[in-house]
Length: 292
Image: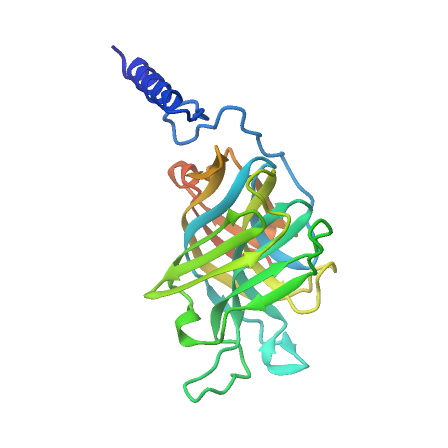
C-alpha cells in the first residue's frame, strides 16, 4: 500500500471514529503542511493599505477563524535623530510595534507589543521609551454598545520585553465577546482577557499579524519621511486558530492562507524566507523608512 493510500485510510478511520462519538468532522484535505480545511475560504489576492504607518501585515481570509498566534524575535531599532517629538523631546515621532488582532462583526482590534515608557527602578516614569509593553486596542462596536478603547499593561518590570528577546504571542476568542492576549518569553508572562463584542465563536472574521513603524498623530495621513529602521525581527512560526465544532484548532498560517501587505511600498521592506519558513508562517523582516 502506498504512503498516500495509507494516510487516506488512517484519516477515514479517525473521522469515522469521531462520528461514532457524535463529533462531526471538519478535516484538512491531507497531511501536507500547506493543506486547507474542507470548505476553507481562501484569502484575497490584495488589500488596500491604510495610510499613516510603515507596516508589514499578513491577513487571513474572512472565515471561521478564532484567533492567531506565533513566536517572534523582537526587532532592533535605530531611530532617525531628526524625528524628535516636539511635545515630548525625549521621544521620537516614530514608534515600532509588533502585534496581532483582527476584524470581526465590524470591530477592529490591534493587540500586542509597542515601544513604550516604563517605570525605572525608583518608580519614576521614564521620559523616553525603553521597552516593548503589551497594549490592547479596539474600535467601537454598535452591536454591543462598546466604545473605542486603548490600554497598556501595567508599567511593571515583569511586563517589559526588550530588543532581541523571543516571545510567544497569541490573541484568541475564549468566549463570545472575549479575546485573550497572551505574551510569554524571556522568563516573563502577561495574560489578559479583553472585551470585544464583535468577536464570537459562531461568527466569521479575519486575523492578522503586523510589524510596524507607527508614527505619532499620523493615522490616516501619508507616511512621514524618516530614516528610522527596524531590523532583525524574525517570526519563527505563526498559526491561526480555526473554530471547529465550537473548539479552537491550531493550524499553520502558511503562505496559502494570507494576503501579503507591505505598506506603503514594498521598497520599505526586506523580507527573507524559505519555502519551509513560509509553510509554518515564518519570515525575517526589516523595515526601512528611507527605503531598503
